[in-house]
Length: 116
Image 1 (cartoon, rainbow, N blue to C red):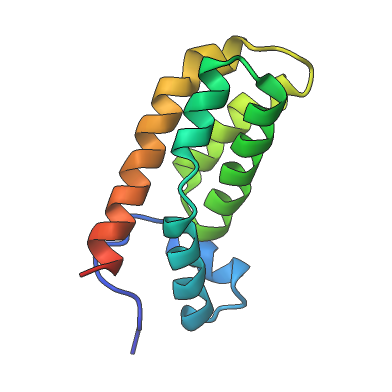
Image 2 (spheres, helix red, strand yellow):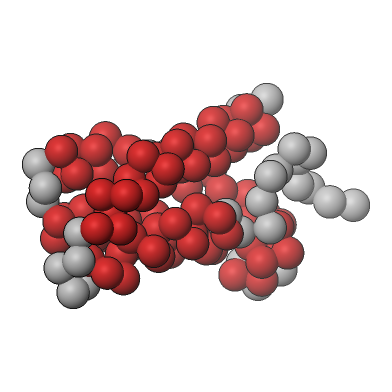
C-alpha cells in the first residue's frame, strides 16, 4: 500500500527513482523541498540583476525539482540556468515570471497535499 498522499501533481515514478524507490525518503525530500522556499531570494537577485547568485539559486531549484519529479519546473530552471553560465541573460529575463509562477504552484500544491 502506498504512503504517498493523493493529489501529488508530480512525476512520482522519477521522484521515487531518485529516492531509491523509498516512499518514506521521497516524502522526507518533498517536505524539505516545500520548506526550502527560494522565491524571495530569486526575486531579489533578479531585481538586483545579480546574475551569478540568481544562477546558483536557479540551479538549486532545478536540481531539487528534478529530484521530486517536478519536471516542468526543472525544464524552466534549466532553460534559465544554462545560458546564464555564458552570461546570456535573455532567457532569465524572458522566463523569470513563468519560473516563479510554476515554482509557486508546486510549493502551494505541496502545502495543500502534505499539510492536510
